[in-house]
Amino acid sequence: MAIGNRKGVVIILVLALAATFLLIITALINLSCSEIIQAKNRNNSIQSYYVAVAGAERMYVRLKNIQATGGTITWPVNPSNLNNVALQIGGSTVGTFTVTSNLTGQTDEFAIISTGTANGRSSTVTVKYGYTDTYTNGVPIGSMGAMNFAGNKWWFLTSRVYADGPIESASNITPSTSHPNDSPYVQFNGDVTPNKSDLSNPSYWYKYDSATSSWSAKQVYDTNGNGQHLTDTTNKGYVDISDAGGDVDKIAIFQADDINSDGRIDTKDAFVSYYTVELNSQYNLGINKGGPNYYSGDHTFGPYNVPTGTSVIFVDGDANIIFNAQKWWGNKADLTVVSTSDITIVQPVNGADDRTTTIAYGDTITGGLNLGDLADVDGNLNMYSNGNFTAILGGNTNGSIMVGGITNVNTGLPSFLFNRDINQGTDDWSNPAKMPRGLPPGYPQVSKVFVIKAENFSTSGYKPRWQWR
Image (tube, rainbow, N blue to C red; front, side, top):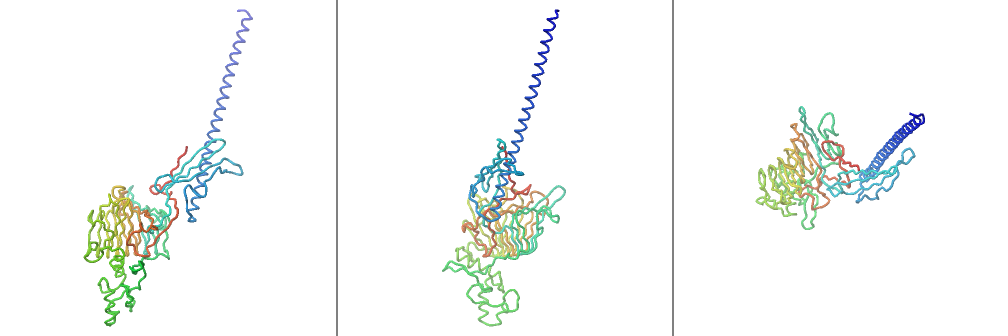
């Protein structure tokens, strides 16, 4: 081969190698630039996400402040939403966020929607919370005596107690906080207040004036409210015939005020008089001996055996409610059962639009299984006991429990079927139509203008739902 030809081949090879090398360098540079751009976009995307989260948390703090001060919220949130708010760290602006908060259309649920922007990239987070709004109801659990709550565990099986607050007692509460070492498997949502000095038991010493449609307090031991009564002369805590001192006129006063004819005048006489005379005259309830809503002696209410249209039933003895006292589903029902002695409720069941109220001069005992929609109280169950309240095994109830004596809640057996859930009621008692009929005057109530539901339980309670896009 000629020398000139060999030189041409070499030049071609050199040029080819140079071109190949240049292509490789260019590809590497493009790849590096692409990775740098992608990394920058990822960083900006992550940064915009955290800016959006900061905005959502800013709105959450605003709502909590409204809650803490008892303010009223109008939706969308008023004052106005957060618009293009700069987020600064160390004096430098890292992005801006715009946040709105409004109802979702689901019952008792609202959403915070926050869009964060950083270096031209945007991310949106949505957080959904449960809430209660303009809520007035009976105290979820109140007790003049001590309160004791206990769940159970055996091997890997557990049963727990969950209770909405405020939980209030004029005595001790065990446990006094959630998840304490001395009583595990107990969860409280809300304030737990032992030794509450201003908690008082409702009173039955009231008289209804049909002429003025008003109520007034009676003098203690003046059961019939006629202005004449005897005095407890020996500090027995009640009046009996000995306080008449043999005086004929005083004996007549005693006999008139001993409305339940048990030989003594005490708060039980006031209890009987309140329902059979005062409340009966106000609403014409038919609560009198021989009346359709009056039962002499102990009585058991099974499914479907309550007279149609009944609103208040009076039992002069023990009342036993098996499963439910009426066929609730199909028609909205509002039933109050009053007992001069004890009330036992086995697996109470009602529909979401129903309400059951039980009022016992003695004790209230309830128990069942936590079966969800199959056999739980979906509506409201309000229970007042002048004596003690005992809840054994499981069940899920919404409403109010007020106790003049001691409260004991114990799941008894370790199994999820024996979980005991005690939730706040859903009726707003500031509306007279939703106030349970028959509750005694002075029944403790709680009012909450706006409250975000609990977020701190993994197995129960409301967890906020975060979404990112």
